[in-house]
Image 1: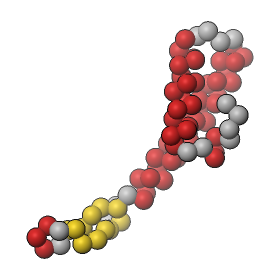
Image 2 (image 1 turned 90 degrees about the vertical axis):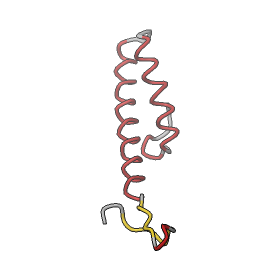
Image 3 (image 1 turned 180 degrees about the horizontal axis):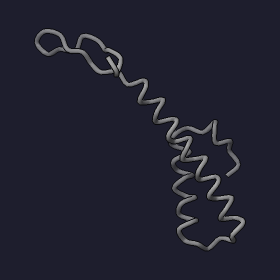
Image 4 (image 1 turned 30 degrees about the horizontal axis):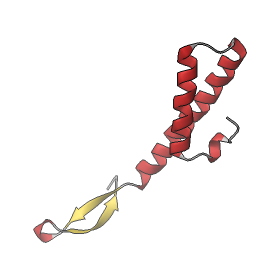
Length: 78
């Protein structure tokens, strides 16, 4: 749990978030550690949400030409 959350890939953040949630669900950690895990989990969740938003913004819809063949892309909100 030493990696800077804001530098983590989506996959790494999600994997660690799953670990954190598992530890909290088991309830076998001290209160202080539970609080620290919860805070870390909140930061990891925010990172995952930010990375998903980035990916969503990059998504482009495929435009189709005559005969239904792809001929390019357009912005998602176009």
